[in-house]
Image (cartoon, rainbow, N blue to C red; front, top):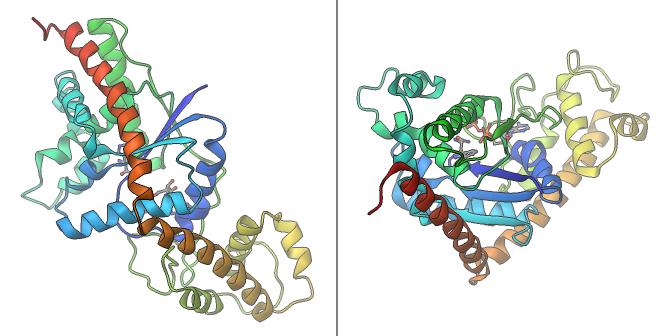
Length: 326
Ligand code: ATP
Ligand code: LTN
């Protein structure tokens, strides 16, 4: 079975867009691949984080992904910072990465621009990411387009290391999802719904109060026509609501259009608000359960043990190949 790995940087709050666009795809993939999922908390600290907020967000992210249906029985789930072999592997990889290629990364250039005091970690960020991927011989890495360049660097590093020291790593491939539906901001349906965007009424987070979430749907920007027809160019607001309804109910776009053929926008919005409310209620109930007691900790304990064992083996192999042994 092919191995797939997803890394989640715990910044911002998870949105309905993340759920429909990414988490629902992950739920499908967990049945088809040997799946790894981890919280990239060491990547988060390349930019200063408030420690108590970071700690809370890490736990929230873990609980929410599991509450959304990411199954700890089908995924190896762990915290990056609990695997001490990953930064050790990252160091060995740093010594096989050129300064030139690291400094050419678009994310590095953007985040270091206009900032006199950026950390060295911002430069070595993609090498740590390569370590995340290469230690476990991952075949496929689902990422957004912004992270594609980093996965390509991980490929280059793997190929170079294999050439220098003999076959050591599987060469991974980025998996850019074309199929996931893009959910738009409810107030400005020409922009994507984004967890780092300041748009309190345009973004629904997974932990939003359910009544508030319904209000956000009811006040979503639409057009001045009457028909519930999918047309992203002319009717971006209604099309976005159709996408949300169709994704959450599993109905096709034309089935949704047919269902609401005779209805006005108010009736349709109410129906969308109700499915969103049902989805959030289910997620939040499971989330509350996980936040109490020690079930969450137990799930993560299992994942980290497996991850450490695999990483330790790879670290030993790398050191031996590089001559770092007695
Ligand atoms: P940011 O605003 O910081 O870019 P984001 O909300 O876009 O954050 P990411 O962490 O970049 O989230 O993305 C996590 C995953 O969620 C990616 O696979 C991305 O494609 C998906 N995703 C994020 N927002 C949406 C959206 N509005 N619709 C569909 N998928 C989304
Ligand atoms: N850089 C990624 C998070 C990330 C990751 C990874 C993703 C860290 N390590 C390994 C895939 C594979 C981000 O910002 N979303």
